[in-house]
Amino acid sequence: MPLGQEPPQLLKQRLFYEGRKFNFEVNRLRLPNKAVGEWECVRHPGGALAVPLTDDGRLVLLRQYRFAVLGRLLEFPAGTIEPNEAPAETIRREIQEETGYAATTWLPIGTFPLAPGYSDELIYAFLATDLEPVEAPAGDEDEDMEVVLMTPDQLEKAILAGEAVDAKTIASFFLAKPFIAKLIDC
Image (tube, rainbow, N blue to C red; front, side):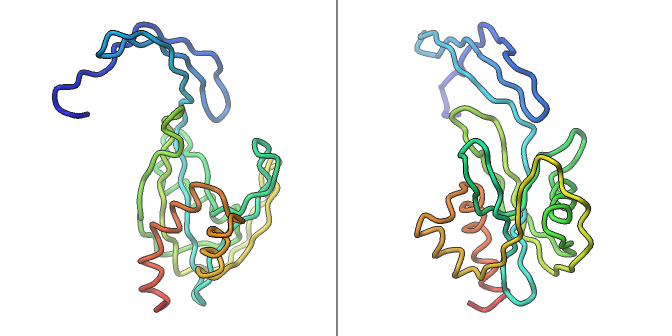
């Protein structure tokens, strides 16, 4: 917060919905300029995401159906952080469940808010290398996904062509790109 700027004053907070993965609340605030208004907020425990890189320089992605956009998106594996779970634990579990790979080397590459205009969700992104195929447990009933392998160049072209539009995947790819370049000598 900039120096000399006071935070808004919380006047009232109402929980409208308590869900399995997130809550939705409405907050009545008084801003420092004395204006009063209501702000909706999705309260989310956060998510962890992996940028998995195979030894032959391919990225492991998922093509996953997303009801909110009524379509299949190309995404890196990710999952919601469970209570009392560190982001690194979340993504180690999720990558195995979703892709059938386990990684032995993990590099944190960044943390960023996903949609700060209406949610407090943070994404914890990791580069996952030294992948080994493992037997993936049966997926969750509410997930429809297929594993897709792409080179970094193919993914970048898909992003620039508007074929890969998932924000967390795009941000994480560009955070990981300098590290990937060093690993595969691009």
